[in-house]
Image 1 (cartoon, rainbow, N blue to C red):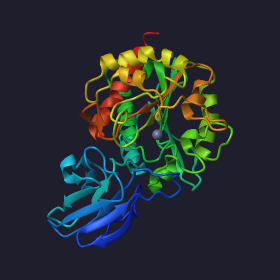
Image 2 (image 1 turned 60 degrees about the horizontal axis):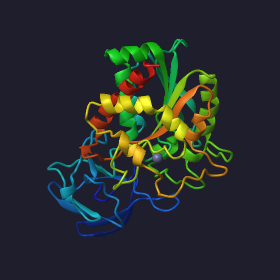
Image 3 (image 1 turned 90 degrees about the horizontal axis):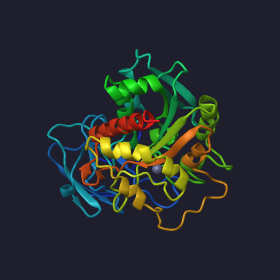
Image 4 (image 1 turned 60 degrees about the vertical axis):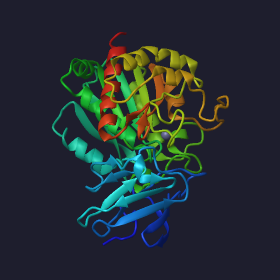
Length: 376
Ligand SMILES: [Zn+2]
């Protein structure tokens, strides 16, 4: 029985500091992160009905408590804020011996993508491909879906995990695929007019190794689109995308998750108005379609993005030799708009973010793409 927190599985991340009775001091394993970040994920077994307290070194428990999984990381629920006291949460282990996983969020790994893709194996509107190999030799997945015969009027590029820990984005990506391939009116329009390409894990090694990924040294994957490039995935994505688009009409969404809590970290946000007002203006029909057509699972408010300035409140200054994904994608011929999208980990304007609601919000995103592109 593993009676200590253990991170020896894909996505695992924890550093155990000390054990005093049923109180275990732990902290996120920062590895090559510049500064601090808040991702952690561990599993543990303990005697039936025993109560443990997990004491973190700082505030790294989300606003609805930790994510908990009793089935090896397939399904997750929030333990709830009531289980949390400052930097500590308490948990009563179930009445049978089994692994319980805990995490800051609701981890989404290669195995989750494989399970989702298995359901689409014989669907000719879906092509499972490989973008490149990661530094550690892992295959980096690329999934194309929608209209794949080359005749689509629009192309849409979707990316997740430029920052390895930001897993809630992947549930939204599943939702975008589900809606696009569905028999709804919007789905059928998307199948006729849009060829999508998605890279579900840009920092593939970071995702599987359980890294923070955000603010990785010397810079993270999200900033690898400028002159100083170091990672194989953004390099491969740049080359492939330029050939794939070839100047045709396109949009790009780069799905992220924000910080753990607080202003702008608990709302669905496109944080790019200040950096590129022209791009922002071109997004207006999409924002309007998303706000009007949303199902209400997560609350999207266009005004949140309009109110957002920069994360630190200081004027935006483009870095000299680094460039983000969206600033790069914006420059591609034919690109209507390219934007980062922040999907909060647990709370979106009061609505609960979880596997199911993030997926449903992905469907909202696909419908908004349909309704804004089809109005052209
Ligand atoms: Zn991010």
